[in-house]
Structures are given as C-alpha cells and as structure tokens.
Image 1 (cartoon, helix red, strand yellow):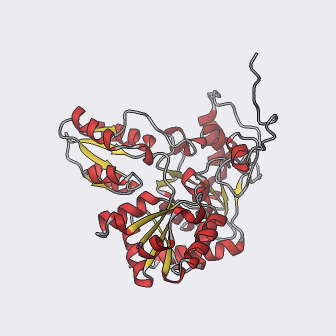
Image 2: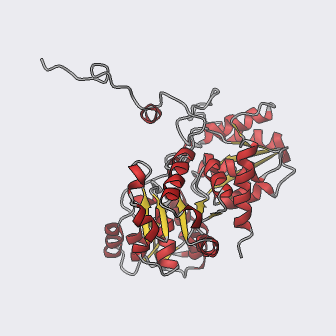
Length: 395
C-alpha cells in the first residue's frame, strides 16, 4: 500500500494565511477569518422577517440600517438607505441622532463609518467574517515594506499614495500619513489629478485595475506608464529602474467579482444579444473595460439604466445581486438587463450578511447588548480621517 505523505510526516507547519483559509484561526486585523459569536436564529425560521421588523421598530430612531447595493434582497428590505460604500458612510455621519449604525456591508465599510461618525455612535457589522478579498490583498506591513522599496529606489519623496475606498483603515491611515488621499470609483480621476499636482508618481492601492483603467482610459497615459508592485515578490518584482520610469505604481490587488469578467464574455454576449450595450465597473480588467460601451461606478450603472430608453438591452459587469435587482426593477419598462458572464457570481463575503445575522444583531441591540462593534483605534482614525478629508476637499 502506498504511504500517504502528510504535513506531519514532512514536519511542515501551516502558514497563518493557510489556517485563516481553513477557518482554524482568527485575526481581528484581517478582513476575513473572524468567527461570529452568539447564537444565530435558524435560516429556515419562517418568522425571521417579522422578528427583524419587530426589533427594528423597538429600536426606533436609535438604529440606522445601511445596506450596500450588493446585499441580498432579504437584507436590503430593512435598509434605511442603500448605496455604495462611501455614500453609506456619509449617510451614517449625517444621522448623529442614531445611537447604533448597523452596516450591512463588509468590514472596511464599517470601519469608514466608524471613522466618520461621532464617538457617541456605535457601528455594528452583523457578521465579523464579512470582509473583502481586495482589502485583504494589502496589509499595513506589506505597504510599509513597499514604501521602503520606493525609498531605496529614490522615488518615495516624489510618490503620492492614493488608496481606493475599498481598503482597510490601516491602509487609509498610511495614506494619510504620507500625504495621500482616498478615492472612490466615481472620483478616481479627480484624485489622481490632485495627486500628480503634489508629486511625480502615484502608488495606487489596492486595486490595480481601477488604477490602470483611470490612468490609461481617463487620463491618456499608456500601459507602459504603469508597473505592478507584487508584495509577494522580493522588491515587489520590479527593478529600481522600472520604478523610476513609471508614473503609476499599481498594487497587485483586484476584486474577486469584477476580476472574473473576460474579453471572451464581452464577445459572447454581443453574439447572443444583438444590439446589447455592455456596461462594466472600472474594477474590471483593462481589456474588458476597453471592449465595453460604458464604464462607471455602481451609482453610474444605476443612473445609466434609469435613463436608458425602453426596449434597450444591457449586459452588466458587476455583482449579481445588484444586476438581478435592476433587471427586476426595470422589467416593466421593457429593458432587457443580463449579467455579463454566463457564470453566476455573488460577492461571497458580502453575502455573509444574511437575515439570521441581521436579526441577531438587531435583537441584541434591542435588548441593550451591543454586538460586533467595529472600532478604529484613535491613532489610525486620525490619519485615515485626514486622507478621507483630503478626498472630500477635492475640486
């Protein structure tokens, strides 16, 4: 019989990341792998909707529920406002009378809400394991090491960090400390215009695709102006000469949902649906964005479909919950709206926020028990807020 080789026989120890992926360790600073305490209601409980309504009614104005566009319908029905990550954080800040902010989104979004709200408000994330794979791709330690690499290449002093909203509070704080700003998918060009007024180069974190698409498509740069820094390779996998020649230093990160769409999926949908308009998010790969008819943020996508004429056909390259909701919303207007790819793809971490978790969080708050509170430490908050304020001051 053939012997089975195991990690034990080879005396190989699993790495911390491997343990996180296996669900056998927890790291409160990670966007994933954190267990959710408490006894959740059964997902098959037929009274979940009524229980959520009752708990929310009992809390009254003390609670403000935020729902990201990518949330499932069973959750979004209880949201007081819906929107993208930054809009929701601003909406939370505009409701100082709400004692509890329940954020139906992912971890970095709840962090941003905590940064922008008052000290008296408490931000709750129904499931602490609702993280973001993109935000996970850039840790504070990795970015600090990258900055050392830039310093050794002699370019740190002329490089301005620009971090996407989809990043951890630690990365936002790094950006604030080093004179940079935050951006959203809606204002990325304005953020880059500002950054190039401050310095000669930009370190764009953590989504390489948004950085590349904005630089090349919206600002007229070439692909050769961009280099990709890979935190898993010595020196980022780029030479000092390449760093000195580049204008855009792109972090090797991406969205697991938008990164799925391919040039083949664009070609396929055009063959299947003659006259279709292809509308994609700028987190998609550059070749997908180049082949699309329209490119824009989540809010842009919604507004484009609202303004679309009856009878028009659309293939949308973004998260499936939103696409399906839009297809149902505009069905009566004879607008055909389909998912760009044949393969169904939800945001798996966003979908961790389900009705049982929401009910548990609301009922706990109604009983005076604050669960899963998201708190950013004062030092991190100070510099992250500085970066966010620079974005708010953009022309």
